[in-house]
Image (cartoon, rainbow, N blue to C red):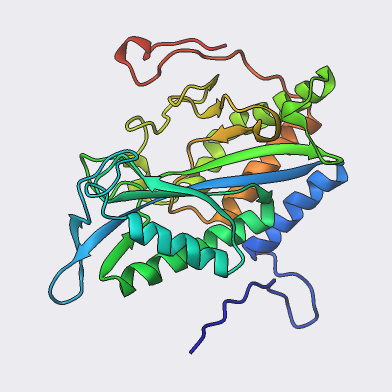
Length: 293
């Protein structure tokens, strides 16, 4: 038999939107961007672990393999699993862009192509349930816990964002006004990072993740620097963007994307100024007392 997955808005009997519907909150945030003539596009990088089951079918802490970053078979034993995940997602209308073994043993990553914010959140939600179902069918357990193994790599939900107007990616625009607008969007996120972290990192386990294995610990930004909260990747043109590196795999994508969007839009509306770039490696002890102001 087939299973139907339904995405919907929650409403009162009289048709009014339910104020605690997280999907509606994201829709409203994206509408605010539309009022400014902007379109927010998001590409998520989703990390997770695959663990073995015991004889009774319960999850263990034994990873599926001992592979590491971008390993291939035979060290990478998740290759077929990731392929099955991606092919299944494509059959469901999703658009995974790439997949690979991550740094930790049994850790994997699937990245999605850019999409409008609401579809990106829908895809993240569908992705998690699909991965868990396929893992069970293959005799494995899929964990999206931010730090399931104390001494191993952590699982994040890196959020890549771009702003576009009339189909043009403003992060790739040579116009000074467009660059200033993108800078204010970034400043808005940085200035509200502490408040929104509660929702981007919702578990106690989330806070064991920060400050190690390329998970940020400070509110700062930089270019091609994975120790920063916001990284500007080297990609140019269509793929010019910012990458927010603090969210983790346990976050509700609707709430996370809504808060990120609203923080950035507040920065634009208030004309907030982006602090200077911090080029230090913030994971090194020598840079613990830094000043990026």
